[in-house]
Amino acid sequence: MKENYIDLFVPGRLCIMGEHSDWAGRYRNVNNKIEKGYAIVTGIEEGIYAKASLSDKFVVKNTFDNNFFECEMDYEKLKKIAEDGGYWSYAAGVAACIKEQYNINGVEIIINKVTIPEKKGLSSSAAICVLVARAFNNLYNLHLNIIGEMNLAYLGEITTPSRCGKLDQACAFGKKPILMVFDGDKTEIHNIKVQKELYFVFADLNSHKDTIRILGDLNRSYPFGTSDMDKAVQLALGKKNKEIVLESIKCIENGDIEGFGKLMIKAQENFDQNVAPACPVELTSPILHKVLNDSYIKELSYGRKGVGSQGDGTVQVLAKDADSQKLLQEYFENKLGMKAYTLTLPATKPVKKAIIPVAGNGTRMFPITKCIKKAFLPVVDKGIIKPVILCLIEEIVKAGIEEVCLIIDAGDKKEYDKLFNEKISNEVVSKLSPELLEYESFIQQIGKKITYICQEEKLGLGHAVSLCEDFAGGDPVLLVLGDQLYKSFSNKSCTEQFLNSFAKNNKLSISVCEVPQEDVSKYGILCGKIEKNNDSFDVDKMVEKPNPIIAEEKYYTKYQNKKKYYAVFGEYILTDDVFKVLRKNIDNKKLENGEYQITSALDEVREKKGMVAFIPKGEMLDVGNVKAYQNTFIEMTK
Image (cartoon, rainbow, N blue to C red; front, side, top):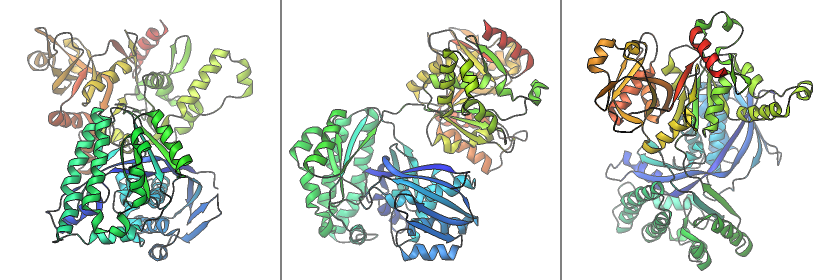
């Protein structure tokens, strides 16, 4: 294996609700009276583990059985292998599509472990397709988002004899529930917030099902089926499925787990009564229904239904709690002799990821920035000399952030690796106190949470943030400016206060601080009205560096009949809408003073969906210019 490799993991996927609605919704291209398809899908724990590196050819190897595939990066050859079917046809299909669209060289993929069972409705074929697409995307910097990877994986899979729908490629999103809406060739993705933990068990029914036969029989009811059976299939996979799926999402987001379980049972009844008669040979599924009606399984679960294309392949069960989940897994394996897997979907944390832009020349701090990055300027924190970036990341990680993306300059990764990943020598270890050795271990743990994105062109903060769209993955994300620190006046850090505030409103949010009227021309000012004893307000206006006299007339926040002025504190929580506006602005080359600005994107989202300004109990400490850095150094030393 080559030295410059990347680690990859792609899970299988579980269709919790809405099987068959993906291909059914695609028929809207022909008959717009057909209802859109709706499905709840999540990645699972099991999947494919691999490493990948650049290569002249397209090579895929299994380390566990010595199975091996190699082909020149030639479109026609790869396409022929895909069309012929076989074990490596899915991988070849994706590589063929990539060669056709991008005309690049190959990759070498070493598959170390596969824990996902095949042909059990868990999309093992889609997982290998996404794995190949992701390897090419990361190694050749194709700048594809998750949906782009999904589309390539889908095109690759349908190059083979397989005829999957787009639902299978949801494994690209990893282990989190999403709503997929299928409207002809268009697919919408919406995140689902889990209010209370969901405990699933899914088990291999130790039987066989013919998915090709199931799909062939059900497709006969489309696009203009006229028989009573055709109408029943279209109604079940269309209107009735939509109602059940949307009601299920309400239950999940409101924490009504028992209600969600009842809807799983309702979905199975809908399928059995209206869809199964169209393919009785495969969908009568006696083993599945014997399990669904097992009294012990019923006792420990809220809901039960089939998986994927249904039939006697796999069953999924929604356990009542963690203990019931464990008992059900043991029952499936020890009493029924069926291999069982668990899947726990945790309650959604409102914000789990953070972005910190640290690319830049640091000209205001010249000449020290000739030899040290601004992010590595020293400050004293609790008696330890630390670089600014470490103080910043330490605060947000302690506030609950699980992943951090640093936007850096080309060639700077070695400096960050030296701080966060490089192990210290034995000589240094022998001279450090136990306290500092423990802190070094903490730094190493922080390093495991960091992802790097290189900003090759300096096109503004909006452009830098837009590079992190894939990292955000459609979830709210904390944006922290890299040249500011925060000092809290309470027992909670400023970041923790801000995250707690967002959890209550789930809107685009900006932390703010009060500034004197005479200083408003230095800042972006947010205006609104503060209710009594409140630490936040809805933003009515945003204005960049207003004249103090005009601000007194128009750009202020009203609080108990007083005029106050609030400027950006340095932390933002961005919703997915912000990334969509930034992408639109970049696609349309909407430059402002030669850059892509984030302020105009924020204001566009504010006008449509609102924005909240939060006032933390604390102060911002700037390190972006000489005078501010001097004051910050003194303040941190106190």
